[in-house]
Length: 253
Image (cartoon, rainbow, N blue to C red; front, side):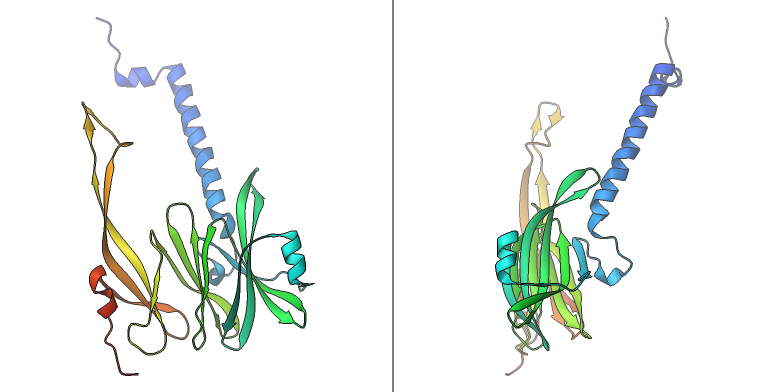
């Protein structure tokens, strides 16, 4: 009986070449993937990074008008934002970016200041996500709350002017939209991020467990409560989902 051991089989020249090619392709794929994921997060200042995009000051001072922006760009959203002593006109545009030999989606949230009938670009946030919502929280030192989507998860990114500089002050992800509620009645709204548990039941077809036909049951479980502290949003409580609206003790107005 002619039997080959596993070592002898994988030691054959043809198998060694095949194994080398597989490893090489895996390394190339990993390099391309890592470069693609980090394409919007390469900066020397860690404060400008988010997991979902990149905030940066305007590279050069240039004047434009609303008419020119609407003429030259695809507009996804417009919002006026009063932030402390600053006031911005926030405009989201759609486009593409060439990176690693291919075109990638590129959305730009641009923060303009008004100068007469002109607009001057001050900051720009760039992401591959799709815009879901752009909301100005009109309260003392109001923040700009934005919600984006990558097709499966909502990315919640909040902006604020801190020490005269625009900053990302909240970054979170959820498969549901956030809630904005003043839980403690102090005039400043908290942001509630929804969390959930996943119970997965997989059907068996014969002796093969089907992943494609799996049944997923989702159950809302917790709420992450973020409170503004004049510099950023801080996670102050994680509470059961059903009791979230009573999570912070309310005080008299």
